[in-house]
Length: 94
Image 1 (cartoon, rainbow, N blue to C red):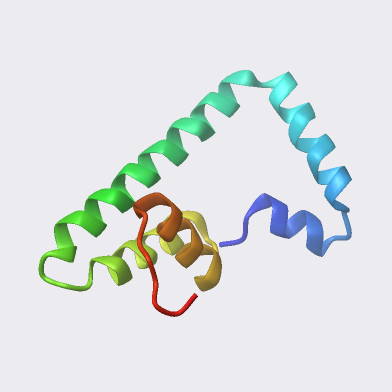
Image 2 (image 1 turned 45 degrees about the horizontal axis):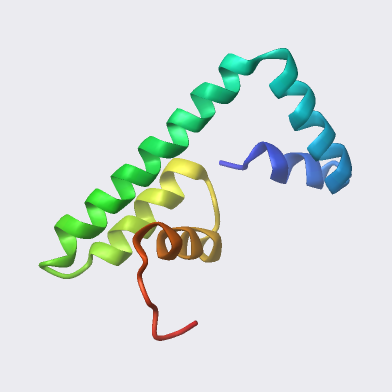
């Protein structure tokens, strides 16, 4: 699943156009912004939970990345970076 940003870039919308669009959406529908923020917070909480619970047995890091990718539609590198930021995981391969 592609993000709105990815789709807009594919159709040729520049970064400024995307930013303007997002500002306009936020101004016209502030409740949408709140729902998105709540969704992001819940994804981050779930990533932290998966990482913490499964890390004792091993595989928590990979499971957290997989969950993040499935929840957000991001690529592997983006998901890895996000999980690193959320969990504070220090990768040997950065």
